[in-house]
Length: 316
Image (cartoon, rainbow, N blue to C red; front, side, top):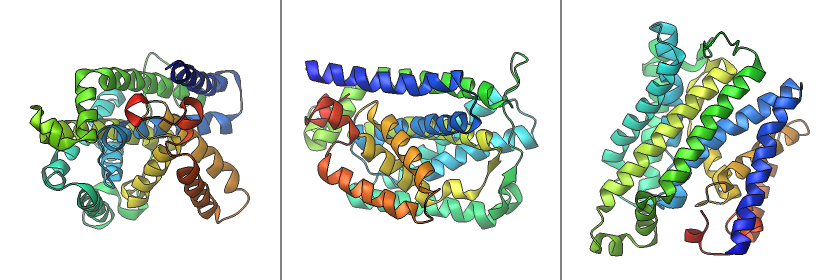
């Protein structure tokens, strides 16, 4: 127990330092990199609610991620909606789409659930790339995604927008911590451990899984909206299955089922990507080897280095 508490504290300190440093440096590249890390971390902690806590492997989260980005972009550029209402709309769109996907995907489980979410996400990718190109811009995407306009602050300055991202990230992290520690979060872990026994104890397993998927969709939608605003651009690539693969790798690298592990996994993934891409065009292959070795020697990812080898249910 003591080692787990100390490990969580160390992970928290590392993440806190990573967040604080950009406020004191003028390096735009570092500010943009940590901004990207925090956005993907928000996506990853939402994804882990389904994957690490509830025990469902989804390859459809790219659709939720991209849908949030498109919701913000279309509402702000085409309908003049403010950024903050657009951000809330992105969360709602992500949640609603997750509910609709769940109506089909949650009829099955295990590998079949993973494959069905993959098929549904790829269908969304094809629609955005071709059938809905008049709305989505097709493969050319939509440039000029706006940033917030609040309190007279110039959020087109990357340092100022970084502060906004930090605020949203911390709110999302705090809400997720409360959710995971609540009776609802413990019920999700019971479903992961043994869904049959959970049902015998009176839990509505289907509703719990669907609720987890909806909450995860809201997180993905917000993260997608923030990413589109960060890079001033959105394209169907955000909906591609590889996006789901990336967030899966990040989560496993950091430690699925843990609150802070996926954040460290995102940081490691993005830092390696940044450095390796400058050395070779085959950086993804090297990153794949890192992932393989990590899954072999660190069963619970980076979090295992801080908390020891223990049951996932204890790693919160």
